[in-house]
Image (cartoon, rainbow, N blue to C red):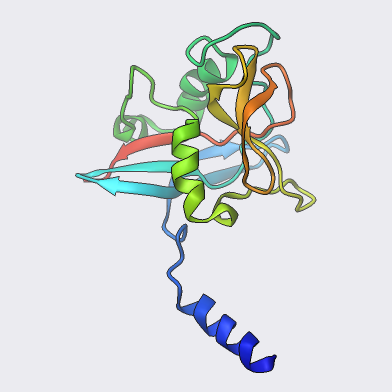
Length: 181
């Protein structure tokens, strides 16, 4: 048994860390008023750009303030991320590094992207609350209908049915694409 444990430990140490590459860009003021650098996990890199997922939660946020049919572009969270969040958390020079996709600079992961990256290692993408408990986090796509939005469950499972858009439980983990050169 000891030999098996030793072999497993050696194998785990020899494996490359799938989510080890990180980048710092921007600063965020949390609910306690503390300003901290925003750490990003590099999901992919190609031709001078990188796709980044916020490493930690930026707090709980409703996908939409009102429980009604809503698209991503019309949602409260999209407006927040591309308005107040973008202006307050990034300098002008940092904002210039962030690339637009479909007219939007800051977004959430899509279900398809979450499936792609979570397939590699679900534990890389877990986030925790202040009591060190894993938490849910929003995805960009609608859930079972347009009054629900998909999310990632605490253990890393993608829930495509979704929570109601006005639910305040899921955490916010934005995604940005940036110029690296």
